[in-house]
Amino acid sequence: MRTRKMQKLQVCGSVLALVLTAGFAQATERVWDGGGSGDLWTTADNWNPNGVPSALDLVFINDTSAGEPLIQTGIDATTPRVNMATLSGSADVVLNMTGGSLTNLGEAAEKYPMTVGSKPVGGVGTFNLSGGAVVSPGFLISNSGGSEGVVNMTGGSIDARKSGTLMGQFWENFGVGDAGTGTLNMSDGSIQANNLMVPGRPGPGVGLLNMTGGTIEADNVVKVRTNSFIQLDGGTITGDDLELDDTGEPDIVPLVDITGAGMLILRDPADEFLLEDYIEFGLITGNGVVGEVNLFENPSTGFYELTAISVADAADFDEDGDVDGIDFLAWQRGTPLPGFATKSEGDANGDKFVNEIDLGIWQDEFGNGAAAMAALASVPEPATLLLFAMGSLAIFAGSRRGQGNRH
Image (cartoon, rainbow, N blue to C red):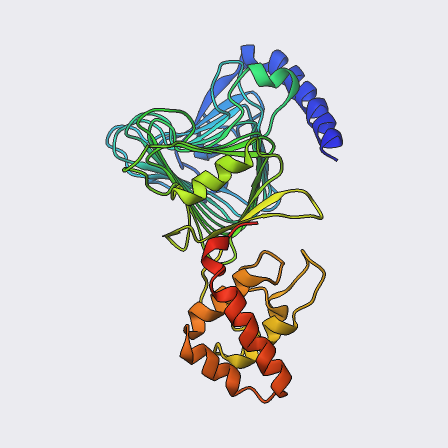
């Protein structure tokens, strides 16, 4: 499947390369001034010089005080490059997209085809994407030192991949931050990239990725550098491998925090033990707590899945609003095929297994010792089941801590 995908990218890359070779010598700059009626991208009088940007025009959005450019359903915008950069004395600049398409072909120079936020003069570049498709082989949120860029994504798609002859012409990453500060707030939609970099390169820049939904897929690496952060509250981030900057003890701070339904999937990590170290030493946390991350190798895909363990009432297997002896029975009866368990079958930590780790979570949420045993005694089951349950607790209570929270 991935081979076919790369073949398609190579074909697209070759086509784009022909456009680049033919067009860069004639490229002109077209600057948004909002001088027309309404805010549509396709209104000629909104640009200086007047005229709708073509595939030969470099687009600069430097001042949106007279109106914020809008790409909506029915608009197909194509340009070599879009640069959102505040100028001295100007306020924030904003680009809105609710539908349609925006295709950035790239430049022969080593520059990102799309930059949201540039120039260290205090203004913020903001791209609000709620629908439509963006194709930009290279996408950067903030650029120059001191600059700030923000992408608010509630829908739509961004394809920032490139291949073939394009690879040597400009950077291939989706970068959240660079020399400045970049922020991606994502609740829906999809992003595809060769690499997901937070921020885009080493240095003073800061990247902040706040994700509550949607999907981000990197063909290669997901990398988070020092002083940057991914908050994965929902949605899925997928890559081949994960690279985290290690600041060294005792100054280690989390670079990734997973909560709720958030999931990080790694198709082919170079070192599983390094992932375990990331969890153990607190570079990856679950609900802000060191060690509360489950690392699970999915037998059906062979991929590694990282999820948070501690969630409210994780051991409320019957979902009746409390954790009690009935939930213990759900765990005790749980005999699904390994790797396919559900919460109702006794899987508290979401690793798709029912085992002593889930029993330990039930103990923690109900209460250890006499309280847990009293709950078992109140369950209306035959005496033989009660004896087995008490024996199970005795066997597993001492082993739970030693087992840890990974497979």
